[in-house]
Amino acid sequence: MLKVKDTLRSTVHLSFDGRVIKTYHGADAALRFETEVKVLRFLEARGCPFVPRLLAENPILPQIITTNCGQRVEHLDSERLQSLFAELETYGVRHDDQDARNVTYRRSDGRFCIIDFEFATLLNSSSSSAPEVP
Image 1 (tube, rainbow, N blue to C red):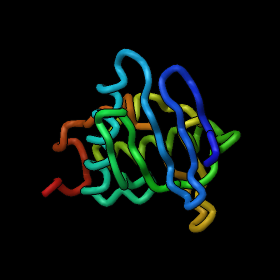
Image 2: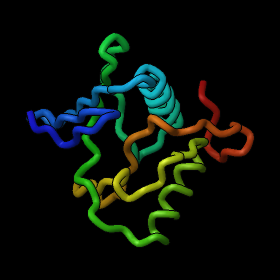
Image 3: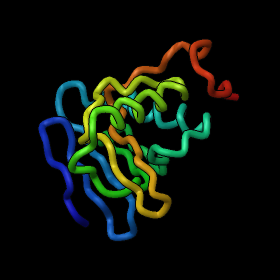
């Protein structure tokens, strides 16, 4: 397993089979875990194609396992960055940490993807053009 991130807020490992394992740290770890789980479920229900899929969760650790959305992007121009996060909002989610470090590039389909939803906000569903969650 490869450690790809180790900060005061989380540790992220990439498994050899391509899964991403994120363990939350700090006083608000449980809240950030709950937020990310809720947002990823919400986006999956809406069919958002450029975010990781939640594969497993463990609130005791707290830890999630997701699909891999590609490699981190070293640089992304501000116009493309704004466009990507604006597209996310059409699915009813504001990221609230709109930085290039939260963007990956998926070579399989040439798609920029967004990761790290622990500070994201669900928007009012009436302002979203995405379908309602069943």
